[in-house]
Amino acid sequence: MPQVSKVELYAAIRRDHRAGMKMRELERKHNVSWRTVRKALDSVWPEPRKRLPGLQATSEVIPRH
Figure 1 (spheres, rainbow, N blue to C red):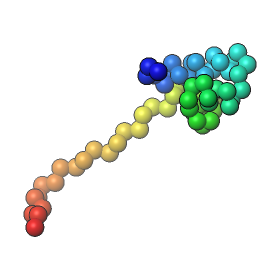
Figure 2 (figure 1 turned 90 degrees about the vertical axis):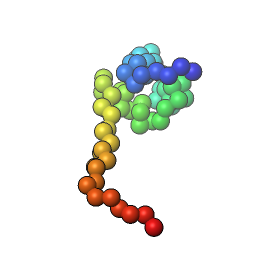
Figure 3 (figure 1 turned 60 degrees about the horizontal axis):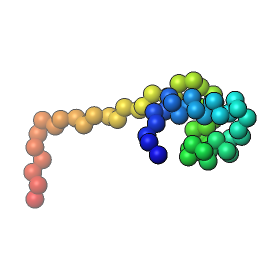
Figure 4 (figure 1 turned 135 degrees about the horizontal axis):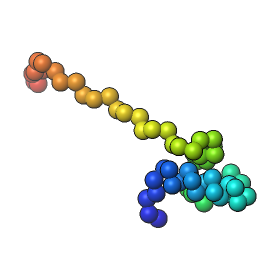
């Protein structure tokens, strides 16, 4: 199965839901959890990705023994 962007996935879930599919069927067809189906039905756009905190450079070298 090719990788699909979240925007396309959300659109497909909403389209299938409008066609009459139940949440459990949507979960199985799109291979996602019920939370993802709920988010797709509640919002047009997926949440932006969370940024990971960057590593801070240390000014001193810690010796290894």
